[in-house]
Amino acid sequence: MAKNQKSYTPEFKQQIVDLYNAGGTSYPQLEREYGVNRSTISGWVKQLSPIKVSEEETVTLKEYKALQKEIQRLEEPRIHNWNVNMA
Image (cartoon, rainbow, N blue to C red; front, side, top):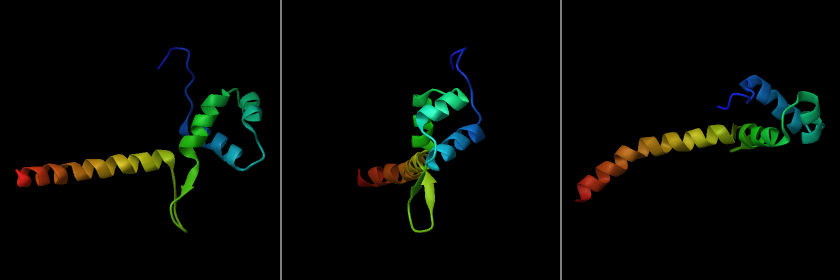
């Protein structure tokens, strides 16, 4: 991380995302009020906004990517074993 780069807590990031998703606050307003760059806020919104995956369940993009990575990790030995058995 760069020396002058600010660090924000996960709770702060989620608070900003929740304010944006509530619909009453724009990126420019959040930028002015909290002193966070608009592109940073946009990235947080993409990563932390809920995605509906079923009638009862939502996940964030960050959680979705972690789940994809875990699935890939779990499938690797199975794919390796399949390839060994085919040889």
